[in-house]
Image (cartoon, rainbow, N blue to C red; front, side, top):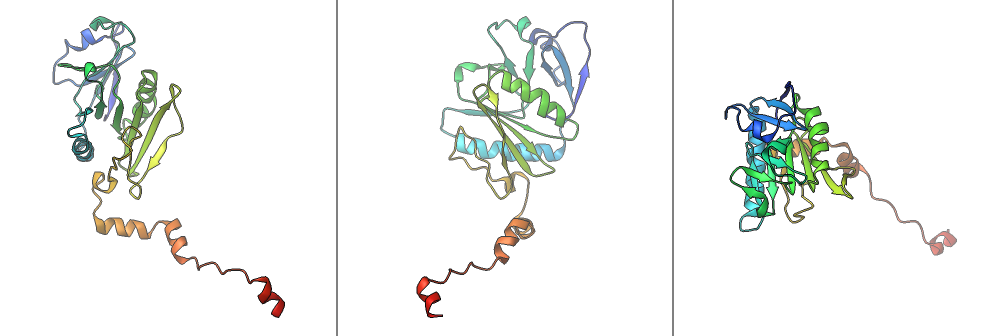
Amino acid sequence: MVANARRTHDRKQSYADYQTWPDDERCEIIDGTVYAMNAPLRIHQEILGELFLQFANFLKGKPCKVYVAPFDVRFVDRAKNENEIFDVVQPDLSVICDHEKLDDKGCLGSPDLVVEIVSPSSASYDNIKKRALYEKYGVKEFWLVHPTDQLVTAYRLLNGVYGRPEIFDIFNPASPALFPELKINLCEVFGISPAEFALKEDKVPWRTEIVARPPAKAPPSKKTARKK
């Protein structure tokens, strides 16, 4: 998600309140606190479009479905009454495999995978508040996409918590733990042409070091050493 600004209210806001707000006013609710969302940047939309395309092509004909924002995800513990739902967000991209969670209003329950594209104004919001939210409700996999650094940080749920993330860059296709056979081409996601990729590859220090390092010589055998 892009930018966020906290809105104050005299009480916790619920999904029932959320539905009374104007349709053109994009907001999210986390623990009853309302956050207004700014319009996404162009680069954000380009990245989101390519991610959706690659996920959608892979999931075609499979049980899981992929959705892009605006798409409401309502997180619930036990109660499903609209005035008792205090966590409603619009992830940039959501993958849901349990069709019972899907209804006309979006998703009621936790998606299996969520992707958020980070912007300068949303970095702490996505990385702290939303990561904690997704961990709390058991989202199996959470990706943070970093357009500036051209990286993907992938968190996987283990024993109820997100462990150390796996980092994907343009040299390593991003692969969800849910679908190991899916390889997301990050050059296409970040709009990097083959020529640009070649230039970046040449500038990677560890690659240059490997190319320049001479082959190791085999140690002399004992017989050779005795002859000398």
